[in-house]
Image (tube, rainbow, N blue to C red):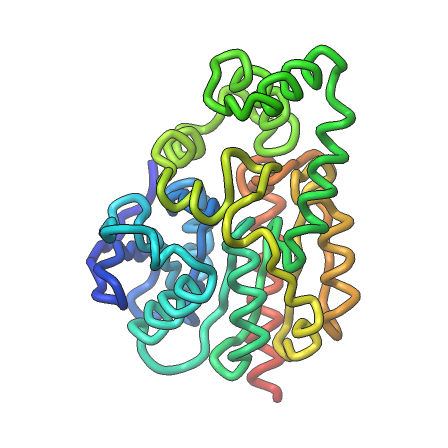
Length: 298
């Protein structure tokens, strides 16, 4: 059961997005959380509302075309650049002052790009399972697929050759990958399951592709590694040992961002905020407080 929250719809370029807020009325700061997919919903990120107990206002939103937000006609707005524009519009709706920014998976890619362009708007940055070079992250996921049981790999290859990504036998084999590298809890928490079931197919298929490691949509060639050195705010990079966006991806990002921290949770995959929830919140809570103190002393 989640604590009470306030919900609203915010007009952005292209329609309205659903915004949900937890936490104190007079917060010590604001944490804006950006979901992944692309095409998922904010629900799987709800454990981050735990940080409201530390005095933070914690804000989530469903991206345009996702969840409770408007579904535009056509797919022309389903781009990385437009998602960055909407992120900024949501940030501006939260009032003046710098915010803490968190993103998961594709949301982690968005927040890294946003921080490289607009560090002046941020107190801190947390990319959990984030990436910046899609081709490298995809190669790493393909490496993990290569470590699956031979029978599972054979089924995946069979239907991938036919491009029958919705075949029940293929989906069953794909679940083996997801249970190892997306979320290792079983059964999956209801909000994780809900986000996957309700994923926006127009968004996911346009931007990503048929599944997590077959990225053939319009984000496939994105690589802004050379921009990471522009990030000047306290940065925490989080991955799980078994993460589909592997720790090797996080290490490459860590080496590009001066003063950044990389933490790998030993029992987690892609959703460490569920899989090692208390340790995750302890780490992130401490990071937020340190960022606030360094800003105050600065």
